Length: 242
Image 1 (cartoon, rainbow, N blue to C red):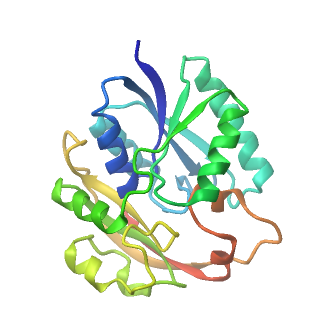
Image 2 (cartoon, one colour):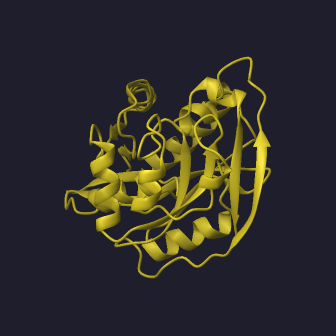
Image 3 (cartoon, rainbow, N blue to C red):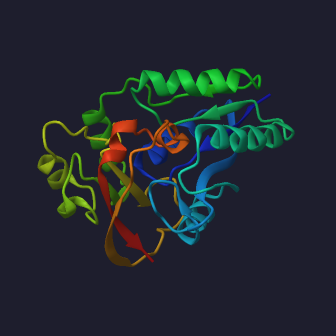
């Protein structure tokens, strides 16, 4: 009997290659893609990608999409309440495992495992402890294509947003920036590759800047999107995709 699992889908490159790898496991059945969406703006949390493009991704992948709506900059309590309600509903369909594209953030992994364990669910991490330089090169060699939709100005300037990730992009990254952006340096939208039946069509829109006030307490979106609390002292450059 196959293990029924949900896949935490961010729309970016780590999610894409993690899903690619987990789909090769005949013992696991992916029941749905779960994505956190900003209720106010109808965009993927932190990535800023429109829901319409997220839906096109899911359609091309061929796995049902489950959208979890959260308010703008939710508190940890609000985020956890919404997540718990969502997971309990999915458990009713026999889902017992939750899959993530995390690579090396120990605190984040522990947080996910603890919250899932409280619901008698299990976390899986198919990319765990992979060398991120090797991983991004494997991603490209498999034929995936992804565009940078958000950069944290603490690590990267405006010139990096809106770029397609290729070997030139990787070579241009400063030494303190992880090749996969695992510390929240940048986020991506993956639009083609072996998990897609057809490429996701989009147009590059305007580049916008948003600055967030540092919160008085840790926000749930930090934990959900692999960014630390200090990141919110800085602004973010977003490339709108239409």
